[in-house]
Length: 560
Image 1 (cartoon, rainbow, N blue to C red):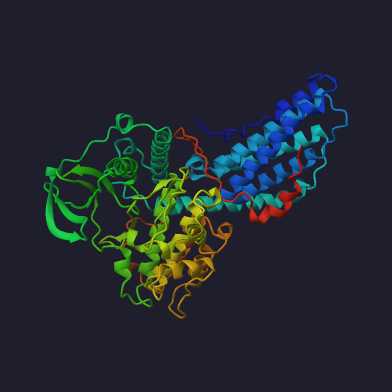
Image 2 (cartoon, rainbow, N blue to C red):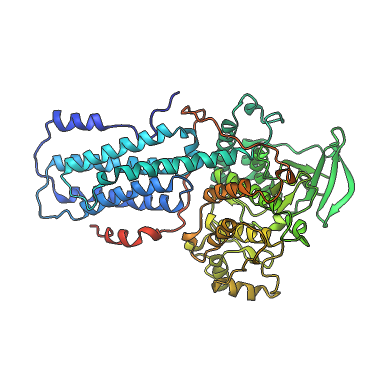
């Protein structure tokens, strides 16, 4: 099916023109009280689109343009006076405006989230939908004879450039994310084997995992028992006899096993008692990410008789903390920049399928024998929409915890919804990890008391970079912004991914051969054709007040 418009943004301009000309509207006076719900609808739409702007992972500048239009309309209708006379024609035209603003909100909801926007990656679709919405908006304002504070037509050329910039950034993001997909010759999901384009494989994986994640979350929210969950997903245990134990182990819970027939290497991790169902439900979803090479491959769970084991791929070089320990910050910079880029790809893939890891640190990143970094240890991961008030900050993760989470832990504000763990917290943790990759040492290693670390982070202290190590300046600037004290000023994951992509590929101090790259950089083919029917997912609000628009929006707060 050829996509001509994004859902919720179809053109109604012709119909509106016909209505304004052909339909005879009654001039009966309508009580102002009947206008109040419509005015409130505009205020609600404004609030929602501000939230979308706050949490936008893509097309943030385009969303800002829409937000400004909704805010201007809200300002204009908020000054309507109760003692003026209004007819059914006014009421009809205000309804039209509300419909257009709702379409703008729906459009913003689609273009800001990768799991929704990727089927519309053709620039023509996104741009034409935006243009049509603006035309409908202008006509609605004219029919109501409203005076706006801003003349949007004056900035037409500037807006066109903003559109192009956002769309270029989205294409670049897609290119980077596609690099994380494993070689097409590898065994993939049977439903995915006939998909030849890597971008389409990304679409398939994101669609499938997103649908599973929201279903699992919905069942959990409704208090469904495990039997019902098992009947829906029908996951079987792996045959324990297919694997043979080796003498290699890491800690008291992780051991290396070999598949009896294929001789492939696997990691067996003991599943703690009482956590079996939780781990099984998570693995049901995470194993579908097996084609993303920057997330550890989950195979399933097996029953060893006296205990259950989580089965994942084996990482030869242990975890990133051990890998970096004792390394020289002045050497192998290209390799470490590659690790940073790998982790960014993995985190963005998780973000695309609405999963936050919640424990990003070097111990939870493993390195393969091909020097590829993979995210592992998903024991506390949750869906982005899931409540995350109960996340504890302990001694193990305090070095990578954001100041807002540490502050909540100190003040006991457990139920403060403004301090939930969200993607901004995850960005902060990633920023600290990027510093660790650059410096090859543990953050705040000079402090043994984790309460002292907590207080320093809350007070705004961050570990500085060592001068003259060869780490690119852009990398250091990215880290500084990622660990900003103000969550609203931290970059979004997609921006971090494309920035690290540029940094990695532009760094030529070492030979590219110093690090194996399994997939060559490529320019993906864009199509305006939708392959999948996407589900609807909404992000949680991170910042109710958008820093950049706070002053302007306060003016628009006047309502009935």
